[in-house]
Length: 278
Image 1: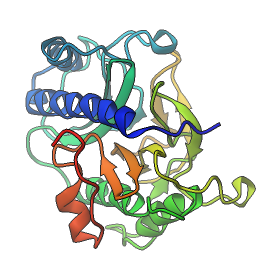
Image 2: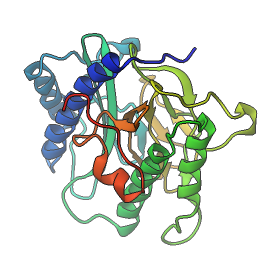
Image 3: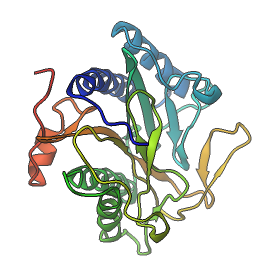
């Protein structure tokens, strides 16, 4: 069952989303050469405490940290530790969440550590980020879940990959419903699958975490012995971007974007819903 939210519940999710945005800002600035991924986790923990919010990753299924820190070939669910020291040229995807009065926010972004990044890595992150926004723009009343998947996949497939070949759209992980829990129905593929059909119709109160994960090579992944860390099977580097979105009668509201997604959606010809928090 898909959980449909009221206006009041969406407002609470917006509060959680703004905490997530604050978490992103702090560890993003701290992701510098010489920092450990554990350092970033401690920064995120402080932001949550300062906002009086709870972490939704810590303890989830036994996950031992506040955020996920996925470096280079790690796609998702990287565990922060003192052994992973960031260096010039690395890329890191930081996935963070927050709970406010029982309502969840969840978002991720890819950051560049230091300098010296290959153009193909910069383009990889751009393609992943823009495919997310294509999916967000497809969250329109009357559309179905598959329309979001199609928008994400279509954007990625149309982008030329530097050096030739195709980007790998990760198959084993995707977006999800969000609200009174972090992971809820429906599961959102980042590509179109005939087996999954069209999916539910998008109606007011429908909330999704849209999160494409794209690699420079394979779409296939494997989980390491820690039972959390997901890497590409061919060792190619990957990017991960995510926002939580609520669909309202006035259009989509990007809960985890500071401006509610207003500026970026306007570029795409979509009017963002008014911010319930003003």
